[in-house]
Each structure stands twice: as structure tokens, then as C-alpha cells.
Length: 440
Image (tube, rainbow, N blue to C red; front, top):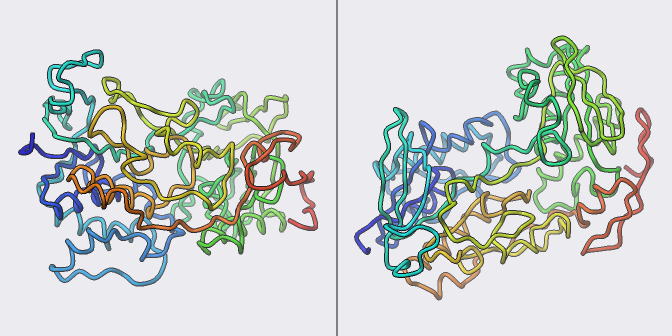
């Protein structure tokens, strides 16, 4: 199989980096991207500013591939998604040339002549990657190895607190958005009522964008519904976060609540979404109703698409749907500390030889993934595929601390009685709308 390509699924930051590492190792990459261009998922949140600085957003092998063309890595600043594409990802894809195939959606991965049940000769057979193009034509690519860097962007979690769409959520689809608002396109939000559902970095970004819109349109109303009680980690790590811009996101959201620009509703778990004309009313599991909203922004996380890996032998954590070896360290039920170590080929390998899940997909349903993590993953994985096991085992990254310590079990528990791995559970605070606790 040495003449066959290594198929990389997804032309996002980690997929393109994997291709650069493969080229540097003398291996043949073939990147299959479902979208019309590189980093098509990033393009859908192009207006959002990243909390990682430029030096943390560029992969080393990719930089080495680009430098002979006169490209130089930006040294400072925090780019938007659009700037990340224009300044790095698009030039990288151009340097990879026809090794990247667009409008190529992977519908299945298997072994040549072997379904999931067959043991005999399985590891000696190439992978077969089934692909559908923009016109609907089907094809099959053979590969010596497969690196799945397809991410989770197009599989957002629903508003429903039980992990399934809330009753009426599908019917209210025209009122719902699963993306961060763009203040350069304020029409949908200005002078109207928006409800934001979710409590992570994406929700912080949404609050920031909506507050900026409200500054120009004073009649804009913002309600923020979270499942948690307010505790030490509700608004992120603040000054203790080793990524300052990530810490600042939560601080801005906290300020907006304290100043009364945003109405915070805590302990709210969505059960139903009713229509009231062209507006939506969120109803909680406890029967509480929020005021009718012109738009509901649902930012409750993402989940991986495992459907096209149904013929692969996988070892995934039953809770996170992430590789089992890394699950305990990234599980938000246990902790969200900055103690997560870098992960490599040994952590990401599956029972199916030469199949690896990398990037956001490797974290399954867990949040807080960093580009730095993905670049270290693909460096190690490609080294393993190339047979350089010493390089694959080497760790070349220490992850920054989040400044948050405590499990989601603490934050999501209605009475705050859950536990965490890092520290005693913080005493919950009752947050009364319109009045901020003294120490928040």
C-alpha cells in the first residue's frame, strides 16, 4: 500500500496541517473537503475574533511549506476567522495544490473487500473512502491510512436540555440560529429581543456581538439563559486564564450582566419552544417561560458525525464520543482545569490500524479545544504513519491553563452540590436578575 495516499478528511486548520506534515515526510496526502474551499467551516464564523494569538494559530510544518514562496507568519495580534483564512489557511491550501479536493463529501470509510465483521487479512487491505461530489457523482478512493479531521462544526447540539431537539425546536427553525451573531449584519437583532442559550466561549462571543449591536440600537433586548447556577467559573477564568483574550471574553459577558445590558436567567433547561406568531417562547423543564424572542441563538456545543465511520472499529468513550484514552482528561463532568496534556498518536489510534481522529473531532462532545492541540496531534500522528515512533511519542507542547477549576457537574447541578476533580465544589450563588452578587 506504500504507493497509496494518506486520505485526510477535512481541509480545516488541522487537515491542512496534516497534509503539510505528510509532504514533509515524503508521503502522499489527499485532502477531501466537503465545502467549496479551504476552511469552509471557519468561513461560516469569519467575523469572530479568535482568542488565540497568531503564533498559536500557525502549524510549524505548514509554515516551512509556505516560506519559500515569500510568505511569513504574522507575529502578533488576534485574527478574525476571515483573517486566519486569508493570511494563512488559503495560502496553505494553494501551496498544497491538487492534493486538496473540494466539494468532496466523504460518505463512508471501510476496508477493501472487508466489512466491519471480517478479521481475516483486514490490516493488509487498503482503506476504501467513498466520496460524493457536488453533482452527486459517487467515487471510491483507496488509502494506506485515514486521518479524520472533519471537525464537529456542522453538528451543533440542540436547545433541548436532554440532548434532543426541544419539542417544537424543528418547527421553530426559522426563528433559531446556531451561529454567533455578526454585528456587521445587525438587522436580525437590532431593536429586537434575542435569547442566547448556552454558557461557553461561543455564548460569550454572542453576548459581546449583541451588546455591540445594542450600543447602536438602544431598544435591543438580550436575554441569556444558562443551565448553571452562578459560581466561580461561570464567566471563565478571567485574569487567571493563560490565554488573556479567552479570559476577557467571559469578563465582558459578566460586565454586560452586571450593567443590566443583558438579563441573565439561571438554572434554565429548555424543554419546549412554542410559537407566538413570528416569535418563539422558550419553556423550561420547570415550567418557566421566557419572554417571546425574535431570535433564539443556540450555542450549546457540538457533537461528532460518526455515521461515515460505521464500518470502522472504534474505541470511543461512551459519554464524550472521543477516543477513550483521552476522555478522562477532557471530560467537563470531571474538570475543566488547565491540566489537560497534549495528545498524540498513541492516544488517538483506534482498533482499526492506521485510522486516527484528530482536531475538534478527537474531543467528541467536549469543549475547549485549541488549534495548538490539533497541530501537535497531527505532527505525532503523521510521524507514526511514517514509522518514526520516537517522534510520535515525543511531546512538543504544553497547553495553557484555562484558569477555571471545577467540573461541569458542579456548574450544571441545579443546587450546586456536584463535585469536581480539582478543588472543592464552590458554594453556589443565587443570582437575582437586575442585581449582581458582590463578588461576581
